[in-house]
Length: 303
Image (tube, rainbow, N blue to C red; front, side, top):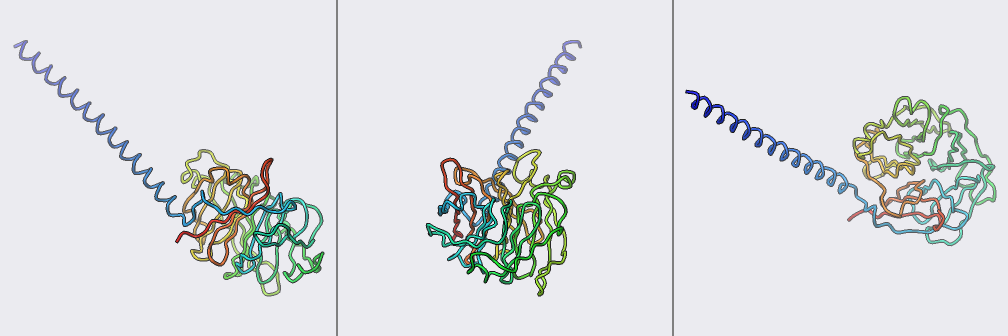
């Protein structure tokens, strides 16, 4: 009887060990399957971007655009790019292959971050949220006349991004950072309707939650500090650039985050500006560095 009980106990032990082994194997298989599916999903998301971020055409900028910041095209025409640089209140304009640029003064020295064009008005953003606006026809003069300064339009914060949606008749101002953003763990975007009399009226506020960017980028405890934004005219998606985080974020028309793409390699020294031309090609500007001039990178739309 004792031997029979011993045999039963031994059999149970063997069965339990076998069950445990099979469970471990299945668990590892499920983990491997999950990791494979995640990798495939990430690869699919990266493949969905219609631009090859690793293969740009580079245009070096003249010395006076060493600290190039924002860029924009008028009506998407790539024959002439408009740009600003951080320190001087000058609007620069040139062809992408030009060795020299022309410029028009619109303001005193200051920390200018981005610019846009809407209804033939050039608008330049200062880091404190102040706007400078003047007609594009003024670029034929050494110094622009009729420059309108707009203050106290947005809450106190640090700003680097400005863009227009010509079809919607709106402009968008993007925060780089503020106490409110850190508290809410999200970057704020302020929309304004551009009226026929060249005035701006509040048209809504949007946010980019850090948690969603973390989930898509694979970066933990991120403090997203974007430097520029532009709207893809063919897809109506917003492309939001972050120099600090070396990321490109893509959202829908209402700033719902869809994907995050890392800016890898040596092409992105300090990405500060972003724009699209009428053929939907993507452009990113970089400030110069120790061994590099300021530049604009062109990413052609994949065929």
